[in-house]
Image 1 (cartoon, rainbow, N blue to C red):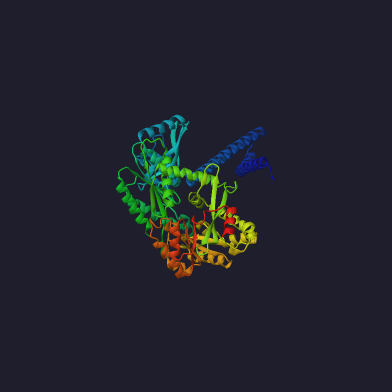
Image 2: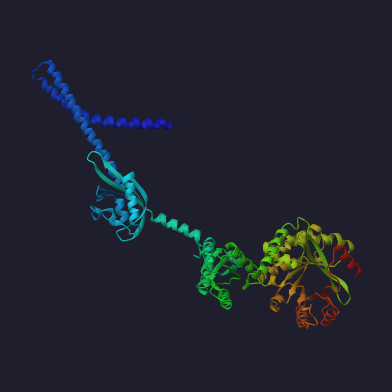
Length: 625
């Protein structure tokens, strides 16, 4: 590869050769003319010295003429190059005289401004002024030009159409030393598209791209401004089924749904100080403190009714599920703006735990509970590793012969920092964080190991019932997981019973029933827990693979003083109609036991016979019964 210096020198050499060739082209014909004249002179009688002088004079004259012609041609060539650059430049160029009258403009100037040469020759550049910039702006600009010889900056002017446009302009002062004349040269480019991009980027910094609402950072800025002078209400709205919508909808449809939601919010809260989309599944609106409590609740209920209505996208009806958290914004409060938002989110999370379409007002009590749940989550992540879980077994008894016919495995958690944490406190956190999958597998593993090491050794045929979380059941191939542990420990599958809650079988019934069938094909029975507390329906029970229905303790605990047992009786009759077994949990007193006998509910679980037992005590209980 040639050295760069060599290439440069070679280029210079070629350039010089071109100049010499041009010179010789001019010199050769004139040299011929000299020889012609010389021949003519020789015929004239004069001495030798005079001939030499004449010849020398002719040569000098020839050289002068050639150099003049060559120089003129070179100057014309340079002028042509400068003219081509001037006319074909992408940047607009205009030249004025010393009095700032335009004397020439290029094609780019005409294209950008819309003015022709005839329109502008003789006019001053101020003819295009936008009217945006004040006298001080132009004063400083001309001071820089006259003192420094140049000014560069962004300026607005008008096109011939009257449209304002931004341009990046450089003005240079040119002094002609020969005649002391002055010219000004202005070079500029239209930066309209650049400004549009800058504006768009600025919009993205402050506004949500999909809905056009304020984003989180803009919300913070506006809240800071408001909270210095006024108080208000902050409402946090979470779209609970956003991930499901994301899975079934195209990105365009999902965006349309979010736009529809934002429009409904704005339509109800027309006078909100700010409405923002702060996350893909979260909207926050702030209302200045002009509403009393009744008015606020009225607006919230109106919004709930609106958002519960289906959204029509691509000829389909889309339903959204959501929850709201509400908190106050105090003027000149010590809390940071982010704390107000966090408070709204805390209230929203508690509303979410109560089910769809709920709202909660923030309180310090809720914050304490939230912080406690944060501690639960942090410790829960290390619970299996630290061997903090254990399982107790509560016997299920046939009241007519008092034999143990089964048992429910109940998860317990002892933590060094939190002490004993009840399942109703940590299971919901585990489900929300996804930790329930890991914990659920640990339970299945532990129960199968217990059956292998303890139950088989005493030749017990009492099946152990395991509660499967709805989150785990829906998101995992539970039949594969169970089969894996059954095969690992080589235990009879009929020693296991799977309990699911009523809520599991409401959605995607075909998919859920398919999983139940696969479990039953292994020899595992299915129990329906918490029956009667949710969406009890004879129609879906007839189609589902259910072996046993459990009467929730809610329908038993207050019998006979606070409950006449009517629902329990209905559930027993329903189970007979369906041909399934029925078991009552939470039976604690003689009166409750006798009532179960009266309504022909043969199987019970509860403190009347036994509380949940450790493994050794449970083995002893089986031996006794």
